[in-house]
Length: 565
Ligand SMILES: NC(=O)C1=CN([C@@H]2O[C@H](COP(=O)(O)OP(=O)(O)OC[C@H]3O[C@@H](n4cnc5c(N)ncnc54)[C@H](O)[C@@H]3O)[C@@H](O)[C@H]2O)[C@@H](O)CC1
Ligand SMILES: Nc1ncnc2c1ncn2[C@@H]1O[C@H](COP(=O)(O)OP(=O)(O)O)[C@@H](O)[C@H]1O
Ligand SMILES: [K+]
Image 1 (tube, helix red, strand yellow):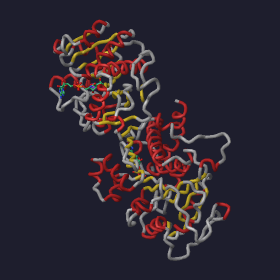
Image 2: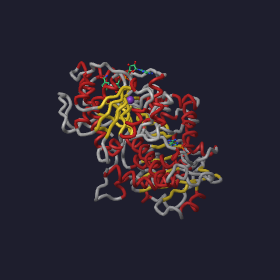
Image 3: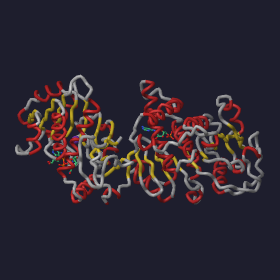
Image 4: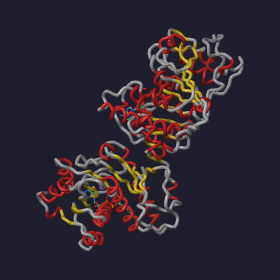
């Protein structure tokens, strides 16, 4: 969520104005942020002015989030640098709006500091840690406040923490009563580049990043301390070269809401596309159902499940909304001849999901190879079932239509990795959804190497393969063909359960089938999936009991919130 400027503040910036919010939340390194600030300063928005905007932005959020509580008392832990400066401006603004505002100087500031003088003039109470050796004063302020601003250290930190700062942070972290903690720019104690975090760092309820999210906050262990991440818009001139260079973003609901397909009143099921899903095997019977349900919940018009013939009998009764295409099989595994049957039935299909639960038999490997290469299968593939009729979009024998945009998932990825030159065989607008193990099979890199450099690896290979990649796991990364990266700011054990990847693949494919471009389908799909996981855990009172089906059932609530909140 981006926070705009409060209506009553009239920032004069010739190149920005009301409503100039970036559509995407930018993620930057400390060096990039410094370059942005420097360029903004040169272009007329001084450092001092940026601090004013930062502090007022923080005050605005405090009022909107906590202004309705019974008492309105805010304490700030104030450091010696600019982060402390932001905190002082916030306190001054809050004091002028009727709050009791208290500045606890963790580190000494210059007695002639104009920010301190202004704060005092506005009625802010000031106490210095140097005069509060036993921390009794701090304890009293913690007990009488409903909001604590953490403005000790920002991007200027050099870990390890100095002893006297560590002691104060530790004291607050361990205090029995702690107010709502709002961290300014970052929780003090985290390194905004690397994600390293001092043990004493106070966990925040909200972290308000100035202008852009600092990259270290989207890394562990720092991410465990940030709470909800938001951006305070400093209304910098939009044309800054340093802003334009940014190619990493954090996904939020506002962005995703813009990617949802329209639902016109006059629609018919064809309006919302047809998704073909080739999935499942004797070993993994439920995978096609989870993917198909995920896709239907996202609004797709029609799902056709292409499964090994013996699976259909057990699946059909559980899923009246599905239509079926039966594929030749060996012992319930899709056999190589399945490619030809599928290719004959793709003419109305707007997206194609391949992979969940396919297993790893040789015949299925040949199926994947045939599907991608469109090589003729060595034997005449039989046509099964009732849905290969002309009305359902059968293609004349001998034709080999191009594949629609593909979501390749799970076993499909591992089998695809064995096909020579597979990146060139992917249809345009496709999405790959590897977890780190599958990414390892695709790239040849060790899982540890992938996990240590998730963004870099995902972006490098998305560019190389010219396709969208969703690298799954806590803090899922979506890498675009052009190397941009989008991070989903969610880590939750709710999703660490069998079948949850099948649901994600169905959600993304469902959006693709409705005509959303690959990157939008991937970004929106991964965000909605993650929020549905959180929502399911919330409903069930914990992450342990969440099943993949619960994630599917939570999708409607996430969509409702996206449309109406
Ligand atoms: N530069 C600007 O124009 C803007 C900066 N802003 C704020 O300024 C912050 C960065 O300001 P600064 O560069 O002053 O950095 P900080 O506010 O992070 O503070 C740096 C100070 O802390 C001390 N310090 C560093 N590591 C320490 C450690 N381990 N233990 C104890 N003391 C330590 C340093 O000696 C230095 O005095 C941002 O995070 C943001 O909150 C915002 O106001 C927006 C505009
Ligand atoms: N700790 C976590 N935090 C956030 N998302 C997670 C976490 N663990 C798993 N997920 C998500 O759950 C899904 C699991 O997919 P995958 O590993 O393919 O599982 P499956 O084999 O059940 O399909 C992915 O979308 C992944 O990003
Ligand atoms: K801070």
